[in-house]
Image (cartoon, rainbow, N blue to C red; front, side):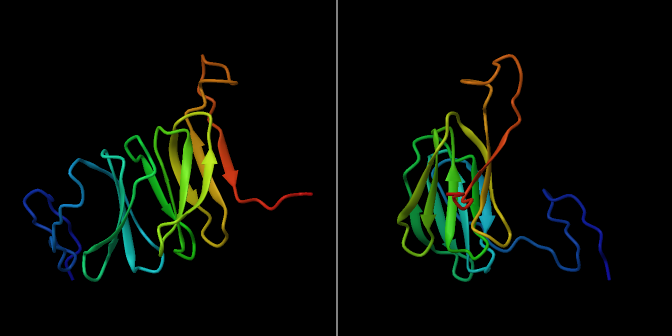
Length: 155
């Protein structure tokens, strides 16, 4: 069984039969990020046009667009059950939407642009990292902080 993968530009792909299947025009500008949901039903794309689009894997049809961000979408993440989609950009918030309806569930406020978001693999817990070198931290160094959203209240 061949397992070598040659150069992608020439489509000389082997494993055993890796080949380009389909190409779709997902956005009018560059796609920056893409994620598959854990159920395998959808994938989402985030673009420089500040839109997040939700696509069916089976039919390659865009079923919904999320347009609450104003800046290019930097990062996406589906929750462990595939019911929520977090998206973030240079906007100072993270948008968390219900996948099936597109409704906004939460808007997580941030003090700076968000670089990355990631849901916990088994719980409704979102980790995210922002550009924290501005504001309350020392501007001369990278802060390197990770924040969590979704922890139960201690009170």
